[in-house]
Structure formats: C-alpha cells, structure tokens
Image (cartoon, rainbow, N blue to C red):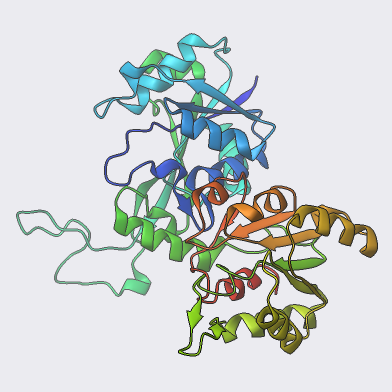
Length: 379
C-alpha cells in the first residue's frame, strides 16, 4: 500500500491569474503544500497540471517525492470538476485499490506535515477523512431564520462551540472508494479538525491579502525557512538598499537615498553573530562611505563577477557557499543568487531574478526597507 498526495494545478485561474505559482509569503503558492507533503509520511506527490510554466516552477523546487502529470485539456476547463482529473489520473496510473489517495488543494496553504500525518492516522478508522475548521460565525438563511442559534438565547461567542466547515486542505480516501463512488468523499467519514484560521481558501484577491497575514502570524517562522546554516549575509546596493535611482544636484553631484531601517538591520544581524556586507558592480565612493558608516564586515565594489568574489570569500572564511545568504534584484546578481544557500529579492526585482528556483520574493521594494524585511528571517 502506498500513500499518494494529489494536487490539481491548472493554468486557467480566473480571479487570480496563475495563482498556483503567484508569490505568496515569498514563495510560489503551491510551494507551501509541496514542502509540507515532502516532510510528511506520504510516498509520492503528484502535481496534475496543463501548464508548462507551473511544471517549470515545480521542477525548480527539487522535491524528491514530486512527480508531474499532464492532465488532459478536457479536464482542465472552467467547468471541469476536481473529481474528473482525480479519476483521470487513477485510470491512467497503475495504482492499487488499497493505495491511499490524498487530494490536496494549493489554495489552502496552511497545512503542516503533522496535519497530513495525523489525517492519515485517522484514516485507519474511517473510509474517508476530510479536514475542517471551526466556524464561530452566526449563520442566517435568506428568509431571516437563524441557522446557528436560538435568537431568544443568544450565546456569547467564547461559549459558542460553532460549526465545522470544510477548509479544503485535504481529503483522504482509498483509490478503490474514489473509483467506485466517483467522489472524494464516501462511506464512513471522519473529521480532522484544524484551527479556525485555516478556513480561508484563496479564491479571490481579498482572500490572498488575508491569507498572507494569517500565514505570517501563525506559521511563517524559522522552521519553514531554515537559516541555521547561514554565516554571512550580503546585499546588493542599487535596487536593494536604494530605490535604484540616481539623484543629481544643480552642481552635478550624485546622490543616493538609503533607508535607515536597512542600516539598523545590518547592526542587529551583527549583534546576533552574523557577518554582513555589500557587494556591488558600481565603483563609487558614496557606496564606500555608506559601508564605512555601517561598519560592515565586508564591502566589495566594482564587482563584475560577484560569484567568483564570494567563492574566494568562502575560501578565506573556511565556509561553503551554501552558508551565504544574499539579496539582489537585477541580472548581474543572477549567478550569485542561483548558487548561495539562501537567496532573496525585492518585490520590484526583474522577472529573471524572481524566477530563480526557491528564491524568497519579499514584500517591499528596493530602498524601502527590504533588507530589514530580509533580516526578520534571521533574528
């Protein structure tokens, strides 16, 4: 018996274009469930898609359990059901009736490895297990009838047990039951309860805003993005520590605007034991003055081959390049960002940088405290 996790991810999303790979808390949305499934007890993860772009992004994660499945166009239409692509895959694959099949929806990104494992354990006692969240809203019908409570005995919210609603995180059944009933849910049904915040499913732009805030508050922490191996944290200058603009005085003097929050970030990282620095292609004294004022451990100027310079630094510091973290925004950062242990970019980085596999896309633009945001992963 094998455990197969199945994530449908079609390209034709309407409300949010290509939402399955749109950046959510610094990673493509689909990454979060793939990462949790990779760390869970499932044997295989199947991403069923009709999009070359989605396949490219998923391949870039290099998760060992993940396989791609080319779903048929007939089951990738606006009116196609999820069951249709599930059944298509089951019919096309050599699965055993006893195999366990987990339908996972990328639009519910809050599920952790332990949630999948506990759901699988619960499945031993039921034909189907589905995830639900507690809903403490008071529901009404259009006819003005309360569906949740006695209007003459209104409960206090803190004493109200609420109702359970599907949160779309996962549905666990056997291949045999799905094939027989043509449905993700059948037979004796068990409920796996998840926190109230997990009821948010990302279908509309407003859902996205709310879900990101929830993710950052409850789940996004150092356990998700592992920084324990990092020793040195470096930043590009123009487009990261500045807004990328050049300002000229009447007399022709050049100026740049640096964000003071970024300056404090370098200091806080040093206090935590990290070595910090800048590396820039430009060879300007104003960058040198900024580096000196910040008392950085390293400052590299006129760096035409950033990767070679940092490889030499690793030799001097007796570390590996995967112990380097770097934030950059433009194509001259590409090689270095593609090789360091942890890579990040501002919100307004060029597309070639944003598409580097596993790069963290931050929420702030260059010159607007984006390095300070990057710092939050480390301290």
